[in-house]
Image (tube, rainbow, N blue to C red; front, side, top):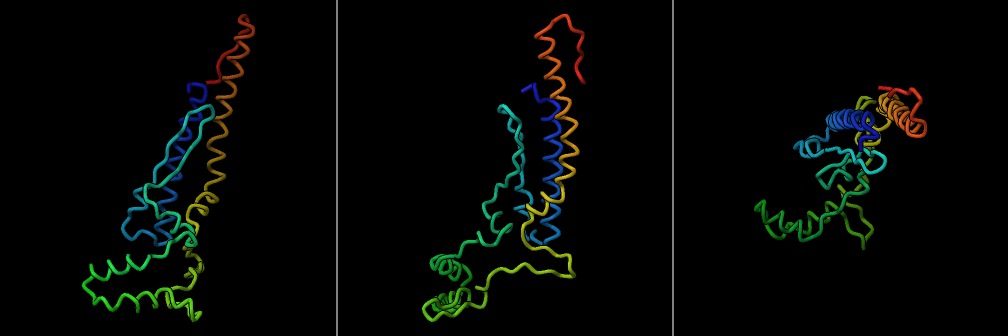
Length: 175
């Protein structure tokens, strides 16, 4: 829509800024094993009525990186196919399963089945909530960047409405 021209331009700038911030945070949290998640971050501005900025990822495991409680356990057939692909003996499937997830009947937790814990390395290493941290970090910058553009668009809408209601009035656009 032409109504929110300045706001839409600024939302694209904000999208670039947030995408770069998310990529930097992934790198800082050492979540860039292959870089696929970082490269998969995209943004778009939806111009239906009010303008909306959506920042999304093309990879489906971003939720598990952002919050490990969303991570899914691999099932037994996935572990079996992995064992075959690695050329390991078939009888190693159940020991791997028990090592990862333990034995629920005996109430034994697996070695790797412990909950993902947020840890610090040198008191500055964050390993969860990369999206929330980036949102908090950039919230003031986003507000400072968007406020003038929204103000210009609103002033232009008011000027247009005044001109429409009273054509003899000498009103100019804000920009």
